[in-house]
Length: 381
Image 1 (tube, rainbow, N blue to C red):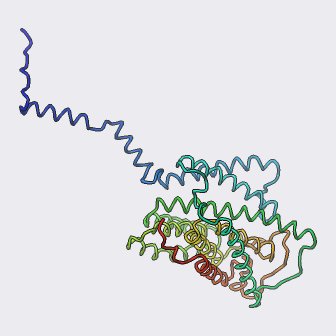
Image 2 (image 1 turned 90 degrees about the vertical axis):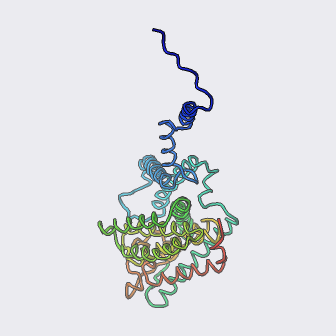
Image 3 (image 1 turned 180 degrees about the vertical axis):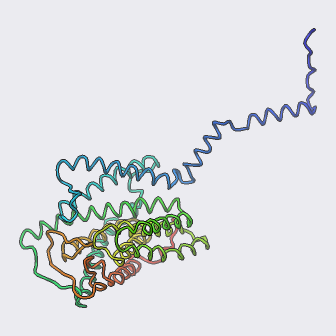
């Protein structure tokens, strides 16, 4: 038998239309590979490039790797003694923070490359008058800590002793501690107010912020980690309702303030492991972290925060010789000791554990807004 030959389909017939439709569907139907590609793209890439969560995961892993590599290099040279944290010297502080800076720069550089950014300055380090803002931060930090110490001395909660250094030693230790605390300012502000604040701002919403803050508080609740955990609980609660209102009103730039809530709470959280901390000191750390976030909004960069952070620590540790989170440095200029009620003297925590610190930090916030202009808080971008 000869094979049956089908007659050609006439143009316009229903059968021809069905075949054409089927061919068109095959042409436009995504393949399995295309579907997987789309899913992977949606999982890792958002409207602003690499999703913030994945960026933070990569950054954290790189930070650990670079930090471990730096310790591996410096440990044989006996420049870092992680086992003896009570040995609070300018040298140990410098090299400890140097490890942090190397790790931070390395991790941020790789992430910037992955995210196709020009350089590290993209993480809240651009903006106008950066040098002027840095110097303004230095002056503000020293003035604020001096005001705190002066108020404590006036109230009888801080007593001055003899000068601990003389001659060339004053300049030697002043320079050494200045270098150490400049690194502290760069590392802590670079991590929290530069990379994390920038990254969270582009990829967070209220519910992610609430979940993150909630997990931090839950961890402290379950493990009772460190001292002064109530300081973290308080700042977490204080940020809840303002961020919720911003979310409900769909306020422009609300993501920045939700990110500030997270980074400030996290900043207080990491200080709970310090010796000698109380709830006031932890809350003050979180509060000044928020002030540093505000400084980014009103100055356009984190340089003011870096300067203020470095000068505050330098004045506290070297110039006035007070305790810093329970540690008194070797090689300080003046000598001080707490007196009276620990609620006002700070006790072992030092000035940062005094109730007066909250007022001083709030005054610092007011001064920041007055000097750099409150109207910039609502500026776009």
